[in-house]
Picture (cartoon, rainbow, N blue to C red):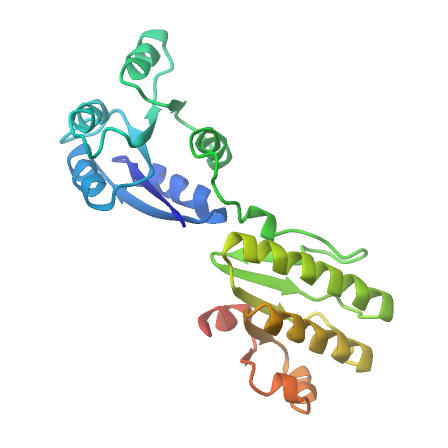
Length: 250
């Protein structure tokens, strides 16, 4: 089940940093720009974690936290405070209120995630879904965009390379299953020669994706589309000219 994360901060920039930090994880994000709205939203969605700024208009983070501690339904929610001050007195005030952790502004998304992992130890990672490289090729073999994994096939697909591709996709399918991700874009645009070896490799990938019950979309140029039309396995799979179009096909 996805964790519910509520960020309460009057800075739109900070809320965006928090939102982007969690893109690699299975989380549902909510946001409010002051303590009053944050308190109401917390009561409504019952988040697993609140990332709470101290200094805000209407109602400060300290005031919101104090009201949460007086509410039986909300006092158990884990909180990480955001503060612009790292002084000892300020930190002690936060700790006395029972806050699990704090982070000093400015911060990077990676720093926030490391703190969150200490509080939510079962945070489910998707970040490993990206990366990987083919020898002699530029760019990552896998990219992640939201809940879509993109597999960029290499320029040349030989027999040895086909075996490497199959192993990579099997590993990635296992990771996707563990992360609850089920959408895959197979990007053929870099493949220079869609010969029999390349075609067989692609058909094998399609078969593996079908067995894993993934939603699949292909990205190909006109020549590749024409070559793939002759195969029964590709006739029912959406094929687009760009990755952006492919993502919209799901």
